[in-house]
Length: 472
Ligand code: HEM
Image (cartoon, rainbow, N blue to C red):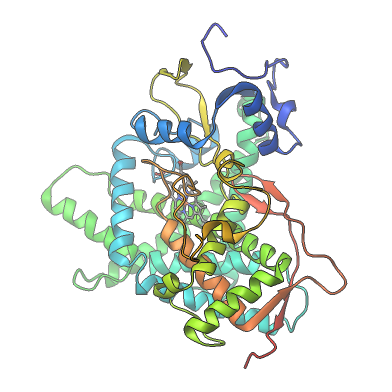
């Protein structure tokens, strides 16, 4: 209190702080209750780490947009510091972050974010998923692995201009390392916050060495690609993200300007694109299929809309989306209710900041509670109901809801939102053009319950992809 911190539950436990108030519970629900009690800005301790939780659209907008220059740092975290060493986009700050983020955003635009080339990469993978569903012959499928593989291949294709066969052992190894690393970093971050002494313990209780080895294996995967690209690089014929990056390195070298672009940095940026774009999009597609299994009437309505616009059994192009408002509304509703990254990525301030009457300390971790918007009953009537119509106006046109920000806002907002929306559009429309998604025989539809890690992933579930009755 003496530090003029935002209000919050008392950290009654000396080592673990307020962790018992949230551990093993529905964290998002616990935050909703705390917001009712303490207001839009509250604080609590996860172990030694002070968390400031920001809630509600207006307060979030004030933090990320009006005061965005102050609130766009990232907190220091034992493992992410070791893993990223200040490089890349997600956990970098200052000049490195500015240059690498600006380059990546414009590279995506140049390569065709929202244009044909990305669409082709996504369609190639979507067709592979259709083949996989076909092979399964209407048997129950746990879709997560297959969706993760195809989303990862989309990133490979955009970034390095290549894809892997799903049964390629090297590709499997890569997927495994990505999953393991994400889990390790998540677990270790929680543990070290509660028990800071663990970082000094022998026998590597945080599995730091394992995580670092994984990082190096993932990076060696990228390194070969860089060397291959260098050999075949042609300035006049840019193929992918890596080529654009090589062009940038050369440009800076020729101009003799000091820059943050290097092979090492490229490795980190690529790692971030896989890290930020893999699990998130996989989670979103898994939620989409879960809600579709639960709502056969919505499947029927999307199918009817797509059939009317592009014809039966055909996959629409992303440019058709304006003629497919119900499909678009369904994608918005999946992103809202699925709440893929409900607490964004933690933000931080460079110095103690005075905000709304409170001190936000330099060493605090600021959680942007996007869930407080997506589940706000004032903005979204009956927020726990899956209702795509809420995003349509009375004439059936898409309604722009300014407060709806699943990709966050401000300087740190997601740079992959267009590709993510394109993926959802093509996965849903392609799968429904050929299949009906139903629960395994004799079983109820999967419950819409999430497991909160970095993303809010649905609990594992199985579905059956049954050939559409009038499908060719
Ligand atoms: C449904 C899928 C996705 C969702 C819901 C999502 C959401 C988010 C959110 C909430 C943030 C944090 C913003 C903040 O800190 O305020 C973020 C950051 C980021 N996202 Fe996404 N994302 C998705 C897919 C992607 C994809 C496909 C890519 C790239 C291929 C990507 C790249 C990034 C990067 C690089 C950042 C860090 C930005 C920075 O720190 O400056 N994301 N995303």
